[in-house]
Length: 473
Ligand SMILES: [Zn+2]
Image 1 (cartoon, protein in one colour):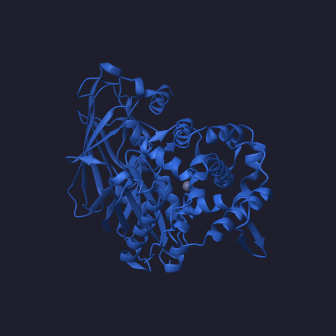
Image 2 (image 1 turned 60 degrees about the horizontal axis):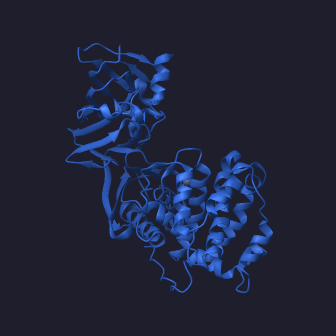
Image 3 (image 1 turned 120 degrees about the vertical axis):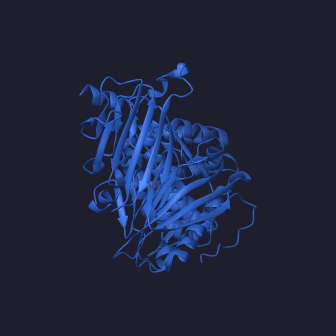
């Protein structure tokens, strides 16, 4: 039990371990060989300097770990999904092997497969040393005829991560897949690129048009964020047999941003034009992961910003954004007014958080005579180093945001709506914004008190010309 507790400690507060006394060579060197004799397999030699109590794997892969031994060839004892090093040596070498192909074929948790390719989570093949947060230097030696695509940044063929980053690291693609790079203008003149991987499987539109879709979504994001906000990311398209939409997406940020987007094999142009998942996930890649119960703010901002990005690109009408808000935000009203966002349930973090973002955006624009709003806050957070591969506290995020606007708008609203909830009069809000329901439709009124702010939310600060639509195809 103690060992398990010690291993668990690797995730918290271990930044002090080692401290200033850390020697140059402290850390673990990984040589990871990928082979494909009878399916894709991984064999890793790991040499560590620094006390290591064991190695932690994703629970789902445990049955597919075919070897785990020390330098003397002795098998290590396993405790659930950890392999233990007796006496926590200061120097250690281990060797492990994983039958990744069999793991992928099993359909176990931690991996998704499509045709001759699959995408496992990092912890199913890169096992993390514990308990300390050691620096890791990882070399991947691909001896197979298959592709390997990771979201990790590497220099001179070496991926540098910490054990803590590895604990939150995302997807890698293995096997036969379509791979291409989409280059874009990043923020503040820097270049940005999406490494797009389409796993093996049929999509009605085919890889070229799927790639165009991802690139166009990137352009739409760049318009809102003043450049594509993720300097580098791996986007993996997972074809979904029998589906005709974009059912699901997910971003995992540790050590490099990776995104998974499921695309139905029958999804047509209309399905992609109507899709919100891809842009929603891209918004996640634009901001740091808020590690301290900040899901309500991350999901709220993604839910709020996504339709605005698509409207500013010219793909949906502004009225459709307001209709979506007017229909969705009541789902967050109880959390925002009675419970506090800290007690919000699964659905309410999205729409309660989006309502929080709308109220805050309006107040920021009122406070700055329409000159600054949520988009300026998000751009500033990114400039302050709050990129998609970072973990910040919610308070750090809010402070950076408010600094960009001037004042304490977001902090004050967070204080009110996070703890216990506060007053929100939705009917009044829509009336002030000039969002009016007429039967099944929503229309907007030019003479409403907040009409100017409503326009600024969609199009940016007053006075700048409305941009031309971004072509979708
Ligand atoms: Zn989300």
